[in-house]
Image (cartoon, rainbow over all chains, first blue to last red; front, side):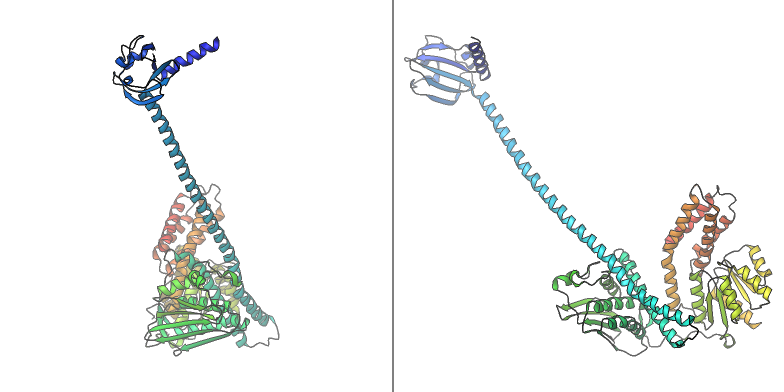
Length: 512
Length: 104
């Protein structure tokens, strides 16, 4: 009973929802039953006993025994309806429903379907984007790993490159130290000078390595500067030869240097930059060549310097030739380490000098590196150093100054003017020097470690040493000057001192 | 007299110029030290001595402005009478740092 009620309820709802109307006709098309809502579609007069052919237009001439669907019929009220004819054994049922409701529902369904399709498409796009992103991440990862590998190999390369000149410096200074300490000194002065020269060369090598490192930081910001000046080309090449010969000797390979110009040969170029480039290129050639030779040729013609460095090393593959000038890049399979900066920086410097670095190579037969830069020849050698009054030429000067920036400049300027200058960097050493040697003039700073300038003056006064001493101090305080004068200084120069003032005071002192 | 600098002197000048950046660093460290709450007399005297040196060397390498500013800062350092009153010194020192930066 309950079920029947429920069924009826559902039927009722369905009817309402679809705005379903119906009527039934017997075999002779006479209406035997009709729903009340037929009127809402404009089908009036469909009542029991009426002839359907007369009151419902689409019924006219229809076969009452055939099932038929009329999807779109305009009802008398103007509504679009769909009609279903459902024939039974004794009567025919005609169902009328609102087609626009169904159309709406269809549209809704279609819309849903469309939206679904859209969602699927969007999902596909998102998936593709995800895939691309993950690919990019993977690529970044590879790059990062490569960068980290390069950094590690860079650090080990730097340590390795620095070790060679440092070992040489330590070795040679040790030799000189031993010679100086040993009572029975058998090595000649000449040997010591040679050893010290070797130390100097290795220091220059170290310096050029450091410069490479510093320059690398400047590569991007265009801060590398080239300063051309009058310089002896032959000296540069000879220095480089002496510097690198020990490296080639150590590997038992030949190192040839062929210069096609006279010695000395004064040209205008940046000597330290040229040196740096030559050391970088030759250093590479020697490093990668295990047998055979490395050859450096230099030709000066029409104010252009042509340089070629060739080796009989393993050569460079075409693939690697493309990468070779990149910073930090190093041939991975050779087992040779370095900073990976030399070539990058050399290329940049050559460019700044007005040339171009060219590299050609054949695998397993060797590599040639060339460049050509302007190097205008000077007709005369450097101007001779200005003459000093003959009587003072041999004057021996002691400079006591703990600031090397100042000391180096004064030593350089005075020696260029023909004076002999010895430099010490504290008061105690100055006093020792004055006790053991004769000096004609002393130039002394006040603020020095161990013993101040005042202390030295006091000691000299106490010992009756009358060597003229000029004090240099940045202090303008009058009491400082008075104190120095009281301790017998010859003159009190305020820093910054002009070299001409120093010479004037010195000449005054020497005349006395 | 030699009117033009020789390559060696030029090289020294170049070396000095490239040391300006390092001097900025040293001076900045001093500045932080004296600007801290617990600035000590030692720090003050270290800064004074650095300014003293700078006044001398920078002038010799032709940086007259750095030399003059360092000297002034040094004189201010001489007149500091209390470690709680380092404001002027800090201002003057910053001035020197700026000049160093402008040349480096």
